[in-house]
Image (cartoon, rainbow, N blue to C red; front, top):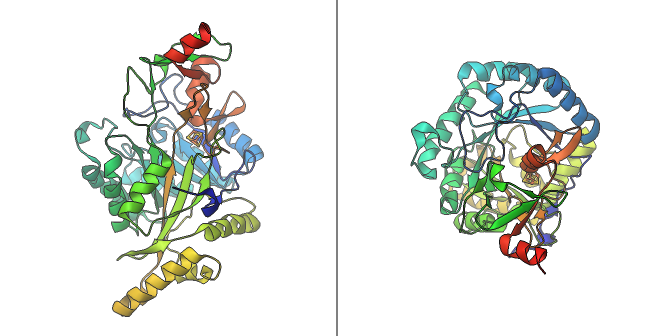
Length: 406
Ligand code: SF4
């Protein structure tokens, strides 16, 4: 059981948050089962996007822009947008499924100032040539994309995957692949799947009027499987990779005991992982970056950190443990003393979960907030605004009937 006192509560807030989430289009070239977005309006104009960038810079103090969608690589002015963001001194990061990525486009994006990619790959994306392939088999696709980005050089790379009940057990296969690609992959993110169901759920809008839940892209007729939580993802990683331990977290907006974001970083070299950074290092990274740059930190631009990470041993017992493992390894394999030391992050995000009163427990200080109608809105729930004018409440049908006829 995780104890909050063992982890550093990330100091992010609405107005001082390292991530700005900007959506350039709601069109996509594949259809992922867990996707929160659907086609309603198409590509945004470059003018509108520039206004959104300026709005974020004024109100959010971001260290990076997560350029999302839909699929951002199919936006005709994606290179201009990247250049505009980079020109403001903020890191542009593209969140993509990688389908439209080519070495030529990659080169142009890098020239425009792109800092890196978060690529979404998992086995529930309905990619035509990857149907019926499991997560382990999808590592071949991850490899192809990682090799392409490494060949361009100078861009960081994170892979994210949605975790479904039937892919939960395969998480270690992705982590194992990530560790084998430590030089090319700076991080992995696992996002737990959420769905709404029309069979047993009833939704109302802000005026307490019933709405048609089936209009949301992630609604299914029925779903009788377990809702996976972030601590469960943490557990399966730790069972298979005992050196992994999260160091930072974000709790819930309603529940005191939920973990909506869990962030950790492994320390190792090409041969093995020695341990993880602890909460003191996470605190040091956030506070140090803010003191130095005036902003908190979400992405390291390079995983190659070198042995200087071990200097934090006096303050961080987790780093001291990793350092001891490193020296034990060096005694057995002296050549490893001169090998580069890397950090590789593993982030876990728990999707909004509906509480018994119909509200959703969201991420405290939501890092993936975006702009809708001149206001900040959690991006994972923006379609509730677009379809129903605001957040909806979702109750079990049985409870709704009791509420209507007490
Ligand atoms: S609340 Fe924010 S951070 Fe959490 S899943 Fe939704 S968009 Fe992402």
